[in-house]
Length: 217
Image (cartoon, rainbow, N blue to C red; front, side):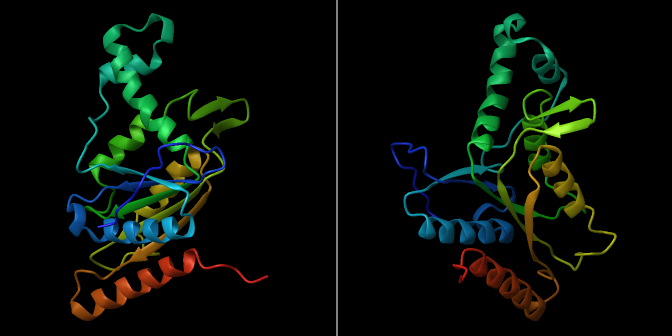
């Protein structure tokens, strides 16, 4: 498993990678392993940078409910102590996301969709007036200037097919919040036998290794 370090002091010029894991298999999840591989390569390329890890399986977030929606929509000066606690959790996640230069997301495919823990995370960070706003010309995402790399692991072959509802959903959600620089690295065929599994992982790993290679002028 990728071992990360967080420097004790925060230099404004220091790059930050937010690593989000969502596989219920933890260290055995292929999407987590791929995201960890990228994070290790990124740390090697940015030795003074910091990596923040958000593991949604080890520390799952509560699903959105009426109390949280009410807390988010209540003006700050009118929130009860209980509402302030609920909002503080969302604020922490949003601050973490806004402070990242790069987001690496490990994304397994569960029943044609995203893990429920990741959906809960999305619900916590999507807040009107904070991470997006409505304007006369339509919604505007407020989480901008970030690169997002999604490491998608699948048992079958779905990329580019109608059953792949996951990719457009994730891309649309991130774009709604203002994150439009999104790249997907797919590892597919992982449950189709040894040869397809090896081929899928090798292709994904090759893409990861190429992501941080220096570009010749």
